[in-house]
Amino acid sequence: MRTLPRWRQISDDLLRRLQDGEFVDGFPGELALSERYEVSRGTIRQALAPLREQGIVGGGRGRPSYVINTSRTSGFGPMYSLREAITARGGTESSHVLAQRLVTSKEVATALDLDLDTPFVQVTRVRTADGTPFALDRLWIIASIARPLLEADLTETSVYGVLRSRCDVEFDAGVEYTRSVPASAGIAARLEVAEGTPLLTIRRKSCLAGRPVELRDTCAAGDRVTLTHVFGDASAVLGCGGSNGKPIEIPWD
Amino acid sequence: MRTLPRWRQISDDLLRRLQDGEFVDGFPGELALSERYEVSRGTIRQALAPLREQGIVGGGRGRPSYVINTSRTSGFGPMYSLREAITARGGTESSHVLAQRLVTSKEVATALDLDLDTPFVQVTRVRTADGTPFALDRLWIIASIARPLLEADLTETSVYGVLRSRCDVEFDAGVEYTRSVPASAGIAARLEVAEGTPLLTIRRKSCLAGRPVELRDTCAAGDRVTLTHVFGDASAVLGCGGSNGKPIEIPWD
DNA sequence: TAGTGGTCTAGACCACCTT
DNA sequence: AGGTGGTCTAGACCACTAT
Image (cartoon, rainbow over all chains, first blue to last red; front, side, top):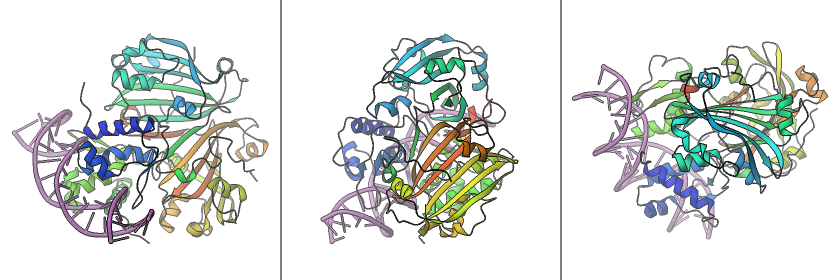
């Protein structure tokens, strides 16, 4: 197991402390952090970069830094975590695990451009918020890096959380394809919606160190889930008739 | 008009040259760029950062840099441009402009947390690819920064392109809410789909220098559009049964 | 005016890949 | 072994905001 670079350790540490509510009344300045962690300001800026990009910490020329939002868009890039999105809004979320096993799959291996007999850890779940199912979720991760996932209890825990803590794995690149399709009979039953109801379907392929390692499909009931992507310091446009509460309807025409 | 920082100028210049196909056989190293632009390597790395994040340029420890993909996910962050996504795949895209005017709107102003009488440039378009409509698009941008948009020909040009070149404006933060809903009668007619067809609806609010400046709604026909989000060097998982051609279907259950 | 973050420099060492 | 990118330092100056 490699040691993470210093900036990454600091970034992780800051995020953890943020989520513990340590900086509710003011975030330390770069110079203060530089002293506190005993690194140069450049390293601190590198550690802060992902937090600023994801709109977790704000600030700017002249203005001191401040905390915007601790509900994190898990990992890197335009990714998000359905779980964290839900619980951040105060709901109680849990999953019903339909499958959690070791498999091989010609289709998945092809989609990831891997050997056809590559073993995967495969997990399928129905995800519910306050008792109502809102998404169907299935994923395949190369078994060689995710074996601990087989023994994890995933009813209350995020897969990425387990990967991070138990396997020391965090994806560093990926693609996401989002489409909207009508619910098939089988999926409609699982999600307790009518057949033909609009679904949000997301296919994600993730990489670790330049190698494909995960394929994930998510099917969400269109009227129960809103996908939220934040970039930069968007504090000025958060919460004014946005995701919480209902979006402001503006009639077409 | 402020002058952009040096790293940004270099980043823009590199992107332009990339899109002109200048680096098809090999991208220069950081040291070479450092000499060529007469700046320190740090500044070059800053200029390259957005290109690497968006998966346009790849590389890594030891490996020289290379070009992955010139079809850019316009601007910053998890944003994308529908237009660029389409034309990158070789289709011919155009827009039918339904409205292009100066307006005020209580709803929009509220959603952006602005004065209720703020004037906006409002544009509504039907977007077609190879003659088939695939999306309905409407946006409001604060008039004081986007007035040239009123005179622009938007049938063949991207709004962001105009904002960039004519208004020297590029958003630096924002939120995007994506949902899936059935098509209403009016929208179904515009998109030439059946009423109730699943639609991908995206609401975006964008900021410039910490101030809200744009609200945009996009309604896309679910079976005609795939939203693609790339982050990092995802070259290992692009194109293997992905967005071009059809995605690999894997039956549920 | 003092303090913040934004930009930039000129070096250094290391891990990794290619040859 | 040589060259690449990844990390890190210790400075510097500037633009901006708060007071």
